Length: 349
Ligand SMILES: Cc1c2[nH]c(c1CCC(=O)O)Cc1[nH]c(c(CCC(=O)O)c1C)Cc1[nH]c(c(CCC(=O)O)c1C)Cc1[nH]c(c(C)c1CCC(=O)O)C2
Image (cartoon, rainbow, N blue to C red; front, side, top):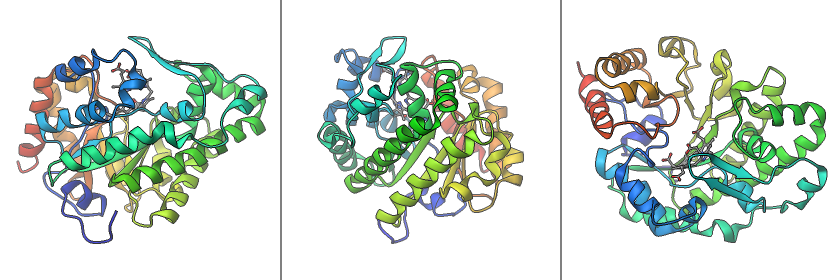
């Protein structure tokens, strides 16, 4: 990342400029709703192997850029490459999601590597270099990691659960041991994001998809403090690093999250009222979001009304258009094209 003023629309807004129309990208924009993704995905049996194959991972990143001309590309990888690089067994079952050997005892934790295996992650950095060489000059590249709380919740349950009860119980019963796992993930995420920046990403997003299940107290300790530590440490290595936080489901705590966590931009989830956000969230934060992924599946009038509402709410504030959570596999591709049209046309009307 350089100190000179950026020219890419996505980076200009991250620097605090207001653009009309706003730049747009979609969380999980590379993936199963795209026939061209399903085609290349079907050739590689394991999802992790796909993530660690620079040529095809770069291709998956570029597919939605070619089709829709988003203002930013997001590295094709997964938040669970971190447990994998820490030595935990990780796999992805078709239509079922991730499976990990759950961490239950102190011995399970002790078996993990002290640091991430950088060699295992080397292909990710090569993917970044390949994407950079192929991206249009106006398109930014975003790197990412999962927040420690969200990653830990999969490491403990060994799979996705409706409310991450296993990790919440673990943290209540043995907070010291849980803290050791979180600390390990803070170190790993700091190194991983720093390496992504060195390889060429221009901003990073920290996905805390399960922040919303934590009550006060637990939220401060397991969501806010680790993200704050990662931001501070990444910025001490890369002073111009741009960091987007996505603490999904934290409600009114969004008001102060970005200042407290030290992030530059804030991803808003689907449930947040955009007018409330524009009014109530401290003005230092660039806001990103927050179309309901289901409105994108529905299309038509529902899509149009939702998009207009979001554009109206954020008028005059630095805003990056996005969904409120990841795009769903059943989304019709024509609706994504219609969304791009609405954002780029609708903003001036
Ligand atoms: C919680 C989480 C995960 N992964 C991620 C999160 C945080 C965001 C969120 O809350 O949605 C983030 C993620 N996962 C993936 C990306 C790639 C880039 C992009 O956004 O386009 C990103 C940024 C690829 C993926 N990650 C996964 C796929 C599908 C696997 C396949 O294609 O076979 C893709 C394209 C698998 C995955 N990975 C994960 C789950 C729960 C699953 C299974 C469910 C699902 O498919 O959405 C963990």
